[in-house]
Image (cartoon, rainbow, N blue to C red):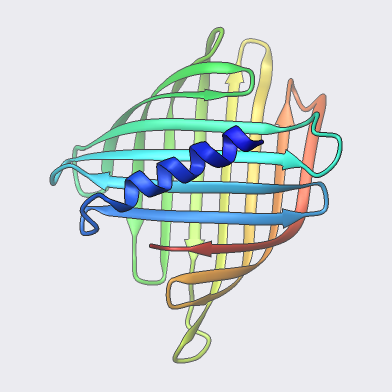
Length: 206
């Protein structure tokens, strides 16, 4: 646990020293009934077409500490057009290292964003990986917006459905902060093992 905290702190500290105009850092913390979850996205724009992204997630149980989940992915993206990009990623997740290559299509509007990705991931064998991310922030008052987001990722290979997850957030957005209700659902080995975590979240866009 101490190693996790030190790694996160070092990563955040290093990121804050970078050019703020090219950097975005978005932490998301969930306190749920089964575990607490820390997740962040760090984006660094190298130029008009190239971008680096770090996605890190730690899900740690309060007591048993046996069903912990970790996911660290570093991605290099190249924009083919305003909405379409190619991506290559290296990372670590349960149960080990992986490599991914995929296409991503993204729409960004003032009140919503939608992203769809499809490609291949290698981790002890190849699988087809698809993901969809949707975020909606309608105005409620002059200073407050509603906040709704869904992230769903699924892998399919010749054995079936080895890994999937669905993260849902519903709440309020005020300036750069979002908070409300959260639910995380994870599936492993054709859903023979499933985990869920329901609670409250807080998220901030630096």
